[in-house]
Amino acid sequence: MNCPHCQRLLYSRSQRKCGYCGRELPAEILFSEAEVEKIRAEQQAINHRRALAKAKEEEEKEEAAKAGGDMPAAFIT
Ligand SMILES: [Zn+2]
Image (tube, rainbow, N blue to C red; front, side, top):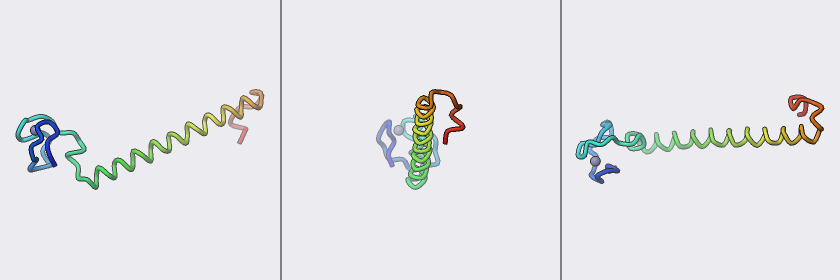
């Protein structure tokens, strides 16, 4: 693991700042690779759920438009 600013080897990940250049280290460097992977997977799952919800919403809008807008979208399932 190296400092992204000065590229020097970091001796401790528990530090929030680089011991050489004193600049703040990004969060992903402070976590272990496994933790970063976990966070990434969670973020992807959230993004996926959001995309699905958005697609569903668009679908419902389309269905409502097809129905001529007579019925609220909630009744069309
Ligand atoms: Zn540095």
